[in-house]
Amino acid sequence: MRYEMIKNNLCTGVSLIVTLCIVCSVLHAAGGSAGYILTRSPSARSSALGDAFGSVDCDIIGVKYNPGLIATISKRQLSLMFNRGLINDTFASVIYGMPTKYGALAYSFDYYDSGILEFYDSYWNKRTVTGEKDMAFAISWGKMMTIGDEFVYPGLTLKYFSSTLVEYKTAAAFALDIGSFYYLSNAPVMVGFSLQNIGTKLKYIEAGDPLPLSLRISGCYKLKNVLVVNDMNYLLNDKLIVPSVGMEFAVSDVFTLRTGYKFNSDVEGLTAGFGLKWKRYEINYSFGSNRLLYNNHVVSINIFYPEKKNIN
Image (cartoon, rainbow, N blue to C red):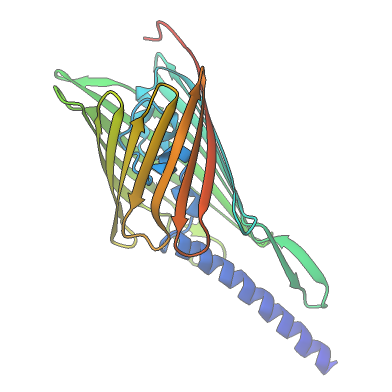
């Protein structure tokens, strides 16, 4: 009887340690905050540019960095991204946006699965569970407005985030993004500002973990076939500035080269990639060096629907 009690306590302790390790890994990846998938790149294009995307117009994925960018789209767009990691973790992102006479709208869904975790329960039965499963739903709105002779593109995003650890502990949180976007007069320069993940804490047991609150300032220089963008992302919970820079060169109407770099990051660094356009479709690929585990390969697809007329 005493042996059974020791065995049960030992196995229960191991299970708790495993769970704690998972929670710690999530918090480390998010830089001390919960909700790691809220910071993940939703597309191979933005990933190849080092996540410097807070002032890139006319692309639906910009709404993930600055909700004001949704107001710059003139046609319906759909973005699909699926990434399978080396440790069998899975991340997927779907974004759909459309212009309307009341402003542009976007709907997004993100999904993360850390893969299978095997352990023995208190009766020495081998169990197989999903280590972590996260989902995020969001709706965004943005509209072009005028202040004097200047055009301004404000926007906001409402988010619902849910996370489950080892199929046992579940937590949920709500968040808000606010942002704006500007074209500078008489110059091929664009500027964006956004405050992301203003929300409730993610509470698994008792203590709550904050979402990855950040302030992003972005500038973009755009010519006919060259785009250079720089983001300064300030992580408010960690009091850490993470600068990033990206450059895109359109070799032709079909083929585009990209590269970027994220500074002051323990995980990400140099990135590169390319894009291929064919009619209404764009296929993007990015490669990123990961300083902790493995190099990251991302593929995404953008679909551009025919432009709607007379929406205003």
